[in-house]
Image (tube, rainbow, N blue to C red; front, side, top):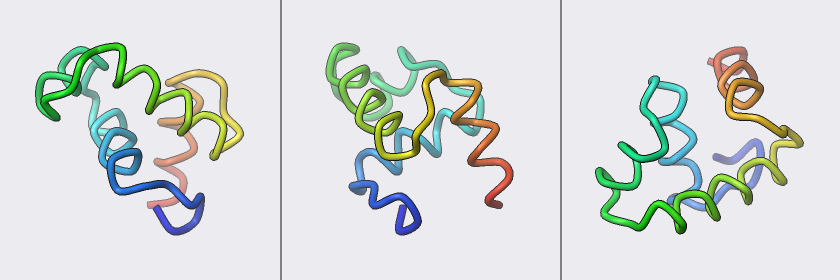
Length: 64
C-alpha cells in the first residue's frame, strides 16, 4: 500500500487479486458492485504502472 500510494480499499482489492480471487468474488466479499471493483482496479493499475491483472499479481508477488 505504501509503496504505490494505494488507498486501503485499493490495497485490499490488490491483495485479494494476488490471492487468486476473481474480481467478481472480490466485489461480493468487499460488498461493492462489480463496476466499483473495476474502477478501483483501474486506479490500482494507474498507481502501479500495470495494465493487466496478471501483470499486477506478478508485481505484487515480487514485493513479498
